[in-house]
Image (tube, rainbow, N blue to C red):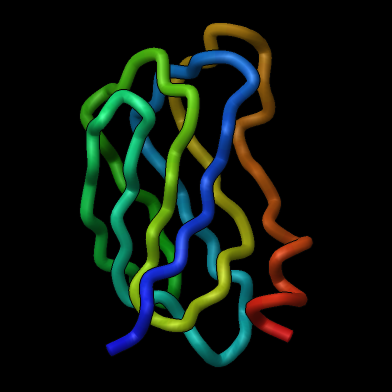
Length: 104
């Protein structure tokens, strides 16, 4: 039974999100499934193909964070989102600093 690991993205301003993209960080181990939990309480279970994918969700408004909780021993490269930032904001977060820890 593999433990669950999570990565959380905190936004400096609320954003409206309609999809989330997960990119694998490489390596031989990949996450097989995950739960995306939004700060507004909405949760969405996803099955990952090749450690990543793009997942449409009903529009989630005024979200201040998204948490990825993965099953397996994978490595994340990036979490991206599509929607409308309430303030100007980059639409992806690189997790390169974690790659050495989980993929190295």
